[in-house]
Amino acid sequence: MKVVVDLNRCQAYAQCLYAAPGHFALHGKEALVYDPSPDEAARGEIERAVHACPVRAITAYSDDTTAGEAA
Amino acid sequence: MTTAPERIVVVGASLAGLTAAQHLRARGYAGALTLVGDEPHRPYDRPPLSKQVLRGLFSADTTLPHPPDLGVEFRLGQPATRLDLSERAVELGDGSRLPYDRLLIATGTRARPWPDPEEAALAGVFTLRGRDDAQRLGARLQARPDRVVLVGGGFIGFEVASTCRDLDIPVTLLVRDAVPLAAALGPRLGGLIGDVAREKGVDLRLESEIERMEARDGHLVAVTLKDGTRIESDCLVAAIGTLRNVEWLAGSGLEADAGGLRCDAFCRALHEDGGVAEGVFAAGDVARWPNPHDDDALVAVEHWGNARAQGETAAANMLAGDASAMRRHDHLPDFWSQQFGLTIKLVGLAEGADSFAVMHGSLEERCLLAAYGRDGRTIAAASIDSARWLPAYKAAIRERAPFPPIADAVDQPRLRVQEP
Ligand SMILES: Cc1cc2nc3c(=O)[nH]c(=O)nc-3n(C[C@H](O)[C@H](O)[C@H](O)COP(=O)(O)OP(=O)(O)OC[C@H]3O[C@@H](n4cnc5c(N)ncnc54)[C@H](O)[C@@H]3O)c2cc1C
Ligand code: SF4
Image (tube, rainbow over all chains, first blue to last red; front, side, top):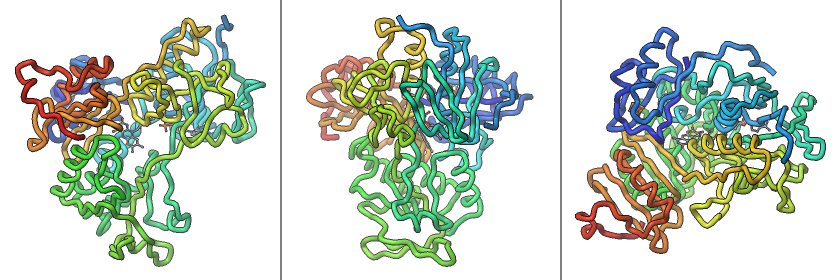
């Protein structure tokens, strides 16, 4: 999967840490770090994190497997 | 009313371009959509590059997520080389031509190269803008250089310095100005970040510049500063700002220069004569636009939040038909940075502020919200590890409320207005 967090919005509420502990972490009081490319197997946890975030800062989608990488 | 578009081309396959593509589809655009990017990668996120990616935390793959049914044709590893406004076509490096009826220019910026080309080419001299840069520099840091020399007193320089300290690598940070980060945050908060960096073991040298580099067999071994100090190092990162990717627009008739591609309030690109270039829009780091929060002063905002917001506005306006249905790009600039365990956030533009007040917390605690004023009006607010207070100040900045803004009537008399 691919994940991005809008860190302008994020207010370090830490709900995502509880929902998907292996994929989100706080370094210091509010510096959120996260896994931008979690395994598909983590989908359940990541989706829980997306929904748990009170400011809707997390976006996640499955990997794009369509062709078109090269020119 | 212009006809509805059927062929949309986006040049620049990164944050602004991908955001625009998503919003075009979300608004029901069903026609052809091509994203041209000179990098070989799918659009990816840059902010993690100077932070967790360099440090080796989690995955280095920061490809941006997008809905599965985006329906975009990617033309990657392929620069746009020329824009023909009269024929409404973009020429690519391989000689092919892409006709468009709407075009979005989102070619962003690149790292300003080290000014001396011979020194820039030395092994051990790095810049950081893209994934490949982060991969190269990250590999070098994992091999634990004896000392990293960082040049540049901006956010990326400080973030990389912070990452080096996290990895317990000695680092010297050379800043040309007397106070770091002063343009963005003002001297008080900039000075505070400088203090924090020193406490974390950064050898921070203000008003310092490199006189020359020393090399052995094409590899950097030392630098000599203007004051004669010699520092041994085989790893230097030049974080000395950016250049806008506008060269490919030369001769097109668009008003584009080192300051960016000029556009109007609706993200429409402008001709050199000031007229609107029909069907051509701009978004993200490359765009230079009238900022309604600063009396329409032209600004290019090189922040993540602006690339997203402007990509969205441009997409809406590309489908709007005529100007009466278009909306203004009235994004309030915002920004975050993570370094030395602190999160710094800024809303508005603090440059040019003449007054400053700590509204919550204190400089000593390193946990605070500060407001910036100019001519008696509130123009910006910054937080350090106090992001939850920030949204409350957005309205005051949008309205340019009197400075200091009302925070808490009880506390108000205790506010001390100082110089920024
Ligand atoms: C290391 C780093 C850390 C950052 N950290 C933060 C942060 O913490 N907070 C924050 O707010 N912002 C941060 N930013 C800034 C943020 O990433 C940018 O504002 C954002 O990437 C801008 O997006 P963009 O799409 O406008 O431009 P870009 O991301 O620059 O993308 C432009 C794309 O167009 C391509 N291109 C250029 N010319 C051509 C051409 N002729 N033909 C085809 N393609 C072309 C480029 O190669 C690039 O892929 C950071 C940036 C970097 C580099
Ligand atoms: S739940 Fe949302 S606001 Fe909280 S830390 Fe995670 S991303 Fe940030």
